[in-house]
Length: 514
Image 1 (cartoon, rainbow, N blue to C red):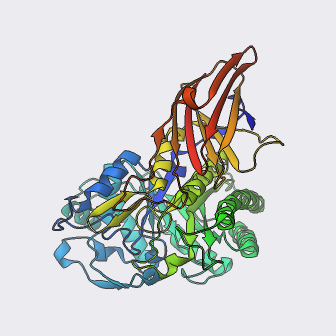
Image 2: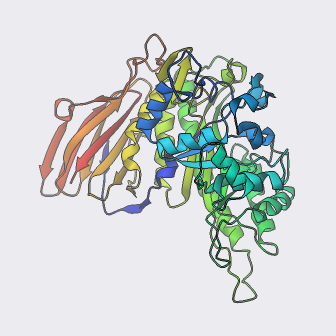
Image 3: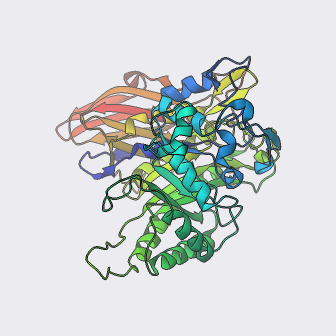
């Protein structure tokens, strides 16, 4: 297989927020996975599980979404602020979690986490069982600089300065558990909530620094997702537009049709089904982008000079990841193991998000810890990093780089995938994913100028069913590869050709200096 990588074929700049993460009060994602409390025998730093915190510090997630997800629709933020001993105890029924909820991890704990990690926070408000006033007060608590009662309450709880939370989700999956709404009924509610958002500016003509995110469709429903977006934007075009900056599509790579297929037990047909399933997202997001812009074209020109016309809304993938059927019955809720099958779909999803960086601005893996497509799994006092963690670490170099258009050749191996980006210093980061379950693959990369491989890292395992466990936490880890020992580098007047051998079921990253 031969691939030409031309550094002049530019798509656009990759927003780091495409590497976002999602945490929710679901199973042991937050409680036990991220937060154990200061009195826990598990080593912690101010209540945060230290091993998880250290892993996230190394990852440096650019964006974290919280508190849900479905949990957001029953969450009242005041239950989770103030002295721990005075916080309410409620019951968490979110996706069969079925646990007491002591609200020891709340707004301040989440926002302090984001500060420690350098991550932008994305807070989803409670539209289903909450009120406009509750949302407004939450925003005031987080962001008000002037010494109002809520700002003083925040200071009394340990954070005098405003947190400056920019990203606010208005509703979550309102087409299902978030209200079983229609686009029309949701638009009526969205107009009320979005219009009430404080602007936190004293200049009446200045744009609001707040970023309002509307609920997009269920990406897993082919007919509904089209009809939802068409009707949503048709209703948005009627009369005046409320504040709206982003449109949040959710898509899960469902693997629920074969009871014999589990996260760690599958045959080659099951392997291929999951690999191919993740690729559907690319067609969906491109179609949604077209529908969104068709809808924006319906908005009338303003009648007076002081008004402006809404011309752009960002497309966001707020939740994505593999969802295997046994997770529905798992205890803790939705906990599933991660093999190279999941690592490959994670790499391919990041590839397609980055390849469409001119259309998609933010995305969140669901979820970071102990739930579905996890980067971190915990087992009692043991903390394990999954192969997905390695994939995200291997992809860090793409953040803020420029995505390159790497066209597939007609003769290319259909199960070998290539993505490349160029950093501002001229170096290329090239990802090679061999999605063959059992077969190695040879790939030749052709560059139009002199090129040198500075490093190559490969994530693979002897058995694609392998996973990292408490007993074998490092069974699958990304490792440096000697390119000259496993491949060839040839220079000519036409440029450079680098040939590498990719193990079966593997993800590799090359750093290339031109």
